[in-house]
Length: 169
Length: 308
Image (cartoon, rainbow over all chains, first blue to last red; front, side, top):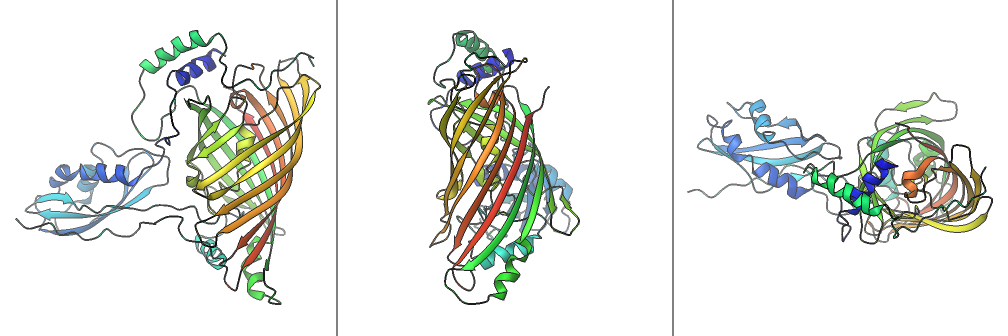
């Protein structure tokens, strides 16, 4: 009972005006901000890397960890990139690992992230029908395709980011 | 069983006299500060609810325009003919915030969500993780249990994670009984919406007859209810949109703690719920022409709050 009152008191002390969603899941803006802020740290990994635009993909796990990193270039240590991206930690969240696609630009050893950062967005597809969870994703997709269920409720962003070439000095 | 009045449905806008003391304690808690990160925004003490939920389903489909025998349809719905799913869920519930209208937010995390699929004549298939585990939503209710919204349900909905068809979880966690004397019966209507986006989701309405079966020696209140359920919904991700409607029957038994000043969701001790519903879903864009799918679903659910 006392515990409940302490809880209730904490709740009652800060009533909120609207129903702004709790920040349970990562959104595009959070990811873009977090990734853009890592350019300086990434430069420590690219000091000896030739100029170029490198496709960069990774996922942000629920605890904010960087997983499934994919970036390749002669002289580039992916573990250094992973450490730089995770230096200050990405926000933790309740979603499945969030796939991120961007472009890592290297100019004279300095790194920057292209302005286009794509974040895969899951869309709840196939409502109301109970489908057994042991169906393979392919079988489930075939079923939903045949039912004419839209693949997106809103725009789905997926795939590699647009290659961006910064203006030359 | 005691015969005194249970005050089962406290006015959510009226705080008891202890609120002043509570507010002082709240200020103390608030001063402790909250971590500024995405996943955990809740304040207050969490608790866990174990849920055993089984659902049996039988599916059939027919074209809205008669095209005679349809082998493609039979092949398509073969895997959905008759099956059952047993779910083992552990839900972590934490009071998250109070809204100005007096309603309360509860952060509900699917700490565990494992499934076993049953099919006639086949060995059961265990699924350790079908995508629901680890996800979270905010359940917003009034103190009397009335459900306003399951916020961010897009993260749990869809044919893969099943969160939309597992909507029975929400009235299971937050039943809405009327205020009754012991031995008294009364009708009460309750609703639970499950929306995964604008104009994407469904709403159930339960017109229940509630009975207060009295208070036991431990001070716990026992209630029972039953009544018809109506279902309406739509998925406007496509145009023309997918529509769903259905009817069913629900019955349940609820055990609540003895403090009318505490919201129902926090008083819940255990809850048994059986829901049988027949849903009809119309797919206007199905291959081969518009299709109506009928699925009979029978849910049996048992929720019990884990004691510390």
